[in-house]
Image (cartoon, rainbow, N blue to C red):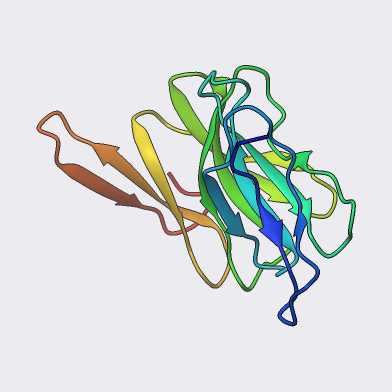
Length: 158
């Protein structure tokens, strides 16, 4: 259809196949989940700039993409994966408040999504702790355009 889509093939080759079905803008932000079988990509709906996070299991031929952030009018960004937790990911979504991105935890297999960390205000980026895969870092942009990195000791602390 003249737009960018994702293709996969085995190391041996000869079995190339398209795994996404975009017909409008093409897919430009794509990466692997830590389970090594799920391709993740961000895509908006017809140019509305409200990107959603999609997942497609490329290990199963004919697998259809699933919207992991199915919130109307919301935008997903700041996707974090962790090799110690291959079946889940963290993603920032402005579903609760269009001006603030909260962090959500997504289970890849089921697609279950739950609020993990609510944005206390002014956080524009998030980071996680590697061993436990907990949200521990928030980045705030100051009025002079400098940045402050806020770190908490545990997910329960401010």
